[in-house]
Length: 243
Image (tube, rainbow, N blue to C red; front, side, top):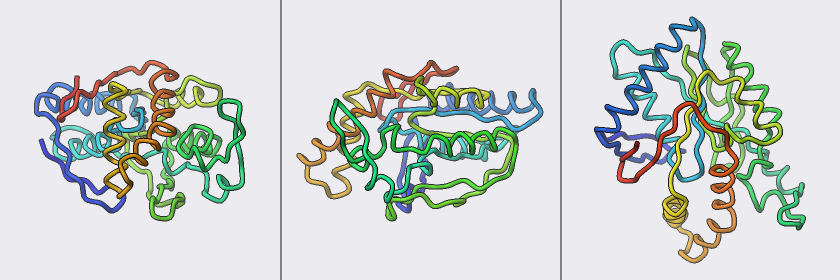
């Protein structure tokens, strides 16, 4: 099944294997509907995945499925990227990695570069059933846009890299989720995707590889190795195939 989505102003086409749609994604949408009806309140699901796994695309596709499938509740999707710390903060603060003090902006996208306290407070409001604003990250501004979308509806799907991170502070997020889903893939597969994505922005091949190896892949390994187990685990095989 082909699906067109708007990714930060760029129209992209994603393709999902029909078998995966029938055996994995439709049952998941129906499971969320049953869960909401059983609890008779808003339910919150987490979709956690390393960089390059396609979590934002999958979240948007699940929302699309919920709109075109009979007898299921529509899914509202939101992301944690709007909780990046502001560029001004990252430029003026440092952190320690591998025994060296470095500017936070050099590792933007790592867990420490997100405002975890702000994210936790926002997730708590959503889990409580509030209709509230939610920030979205603007890649042109390199900053979040506050209250860019309104969170409504009975099923909210929150996607992000570190939602299941099993480290201090982050692990407390899990208590707000009624269902947790992980999307994973082989590290080499993710590296190839990330390099390809970087080159599409006009970055020279060697520069793209250097950036991915020094930044993105560190975050990939963090997600793969330091996340708690999800209720539902989905593996990306490539070419629109999932198990």
